Length: 326
Ligand code: AMP
Ligand code: MN
Ligand code: MN
Image 1 (tube, rainbow, N blue to C red):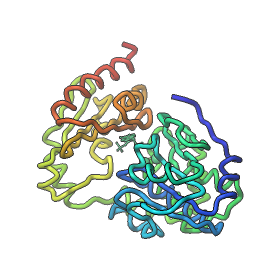
Image 2 (cartoon, rainbow, N blue to C red):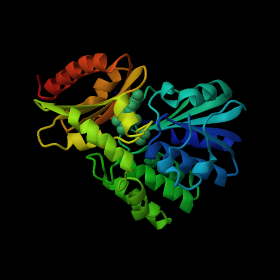
Image 3 (cartoon, rainbow, N blue to C red):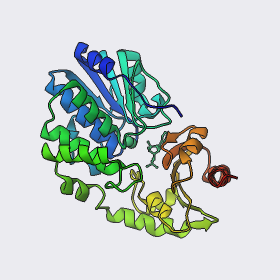
């Protein structure tokens, strides 16, 4: 995993030179994916750029309250762009079809991210692993370039900070991040509304899902895991589950060192990892073709739930042993 690499001047110059800009973020978007994307899109529109914002399949219903979320397209199939800005995505596959189209139809690409597993794709890097959210990197760019911070931009950026830090609770929460949150609130971002509409809510369908999923929980020597099957999802009438609520809940168990949640898809399995400080699941997810942070990471594996569980649980055990100097 490489150190920070951020070429602020090149990014500001590329934006100044561009008229048409495609802004993109990762598939299965979370609050930081949407918040950082809407934040930079708003700032660019403030500079009179022609902005196309897109994420495969669009905005999840629970994030539709974010200002200007209706401007995000579910796909992009036309147009040529002076610049593409990819946000919160550690590799180009993570941006889905929008990313593929954008790479082929943009003159230049800015890779703006905060994942230590970032593959450094693109022409201009703004990759800051010490930032708690891509939204923090967007804020830094705005400050560097001296662009205006509107209320809507501040609202979206604060949503990115709040969701990626779980309400300023994760170990990576820095004093700098709190200073930025303060500046965003001063620009009009409503902290308590964002908290209420992201972290402090859930649908009843999610409770139904947990009712089933919690029955699969196992804890052995610090490794806690659970599986969500297709039938659990069907019974709860849920097609997607976009937040890491269950895996975050499990890693909080006193005896847990690493938590793993498997989610069965029709022909693949999505896996979420969380670790207590001292264990590195980012490296594990990267080795499995995914990515993330030291304490929160994920990957998707082709094949059955059982195959994924056998492989991943054995490797997770090694990650725990490595954390213990074994
Ligand atoms: P999640 O468990 O889905 O909340 O994801 C935790 C972290 O891992 C986030 O920083 C994600 O960006 C990252 N992540 C999850 N799935 C993948 C994947 N398939 N490829 C790369 N990074 C991922
Ligand atoms: Mn994200
Ligand atoms: Mn993020």
